[in-house]
Length: 322
Image (cartoon, rainbow, N blue to C red; front, side, top):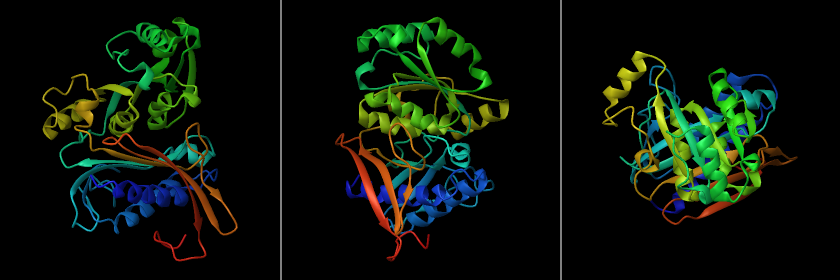
């Protein structure tokens, strides 16, 4: 894919992040999410792509925009599959917490798994621990393998886990293995990326989160040289039936690796911080506008860019009237 698209995509996440950030700490999850969705959708209008949302806000009858199957862009560029999460961390934003981001991933048409709206059991590590994990191994086995690969003692390994009732046994097993734990309320895309950045202090992501977010994380980790494995976890028979009908997996219970989620080497990923986090700073408003911090990357080149942008709201904006 054209490398110039990477910078176009980051403008999309910047717009959504700035719009959502105005609702930080105001206790209104719906308003924050709606603001991000609206500005992200409008920002796609100016892109020279023939884009299709394959992971988005839900089915057409569930979401007014950025729904699965919606066409975005001017329709005159290359055909691209796009996965979006305009605001990962609606609760985080509403409460003024850490690690809320606006994020999207893209790949040439047919190269991205159309993940059903269900759960996924995941394990992810950064580049230095790549090749040491196995979703079918026990937490202790994975912790010991990662520790050996990183040259650490298991007691020095930090595992990031969503704080959910379903993870009670996982948390117990990790503690028995002697590892440290960082519990998060939301944001398992950020959680999956954290092991790829040593400064985050995170070594492994474990646990069950949303399947679409697993695919988005795979697009980033492919560029970063990390690794993610996953397996769909269905909440009911209807979800299992829908996954079969989608027909993107021959075996809906298979262990998914990165190439199953993102084929080839043409994926792109962009994310902008909404609230402060380990990887990205959140939006800071100034007297004239705002400052954003974003991450953008391409798997083909392996280039990872951190972009600090200063937005002047007194001038004409490409995103609308903030």
